[in-house]
Length: 279
Image 1 (spheres, rainbow, N blue to C red):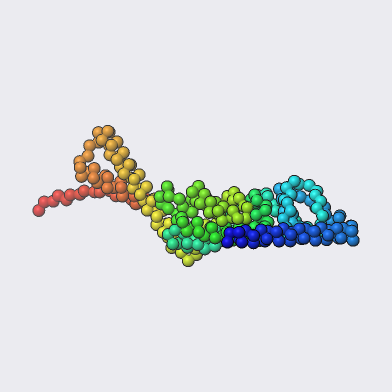
Image 2 (cartoon, rainbow, N blue to C red; image 1 turned 90 degrees about the vertical axis):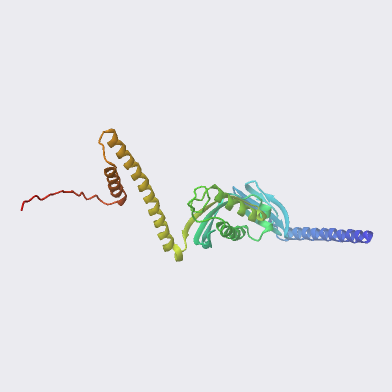
């Protein structure tokens, strides 16, 4: 059984080699005939390799080589195909899309991707269009990674999209890099360009942010008021201005009301009067 399979494999390889030889001979004949009949066609073999550019050369649909040195080159034009692949840094603008962040809130997000082609063979032959490929993959990765982080977090140690710390950036880059390896692309950076709540919840989230900001402000005011009152009482004691417990409590109450109310204090003068008369 193994001998039969080996014979079949050897016969198939021999047939493929013979076919390739026949194809190569036929291609050579076409090149020679075309050159003899139209010798002026040789002038069309010149082309230029630009800086930061690589050219993948095909002949009759078969890979020949990759040109990396800039300048003028010449390759016989019959059956020749040139695929130009720029190797300079390029940017991809991902349009604004609506996604759900980790807490389930809809947000609108867009991003800018910086990338570079490092394998021209893969970019030219392994995918139909490397630009379309990274565009599609980047949109999917942005949606998937955005769902792993909250829009904002009260815990400063927790990564969130609004702050866009190193952990969030690394997550975007690593996910996208894994997705575009097939196209020979290296991802240099991903930056969020637009990040807002979706219109349907924007007003509610704004009210929530205002309420949280008001609470934080009140906490700060109360903490400051306590420090001011403590300092005032200590200074009065050091100045030997003795007060009874009820007077101290009244002073503390008045100071806290004045400081925490956020309104201008209204002075009140207490007047004690007594009426003496005889019948």
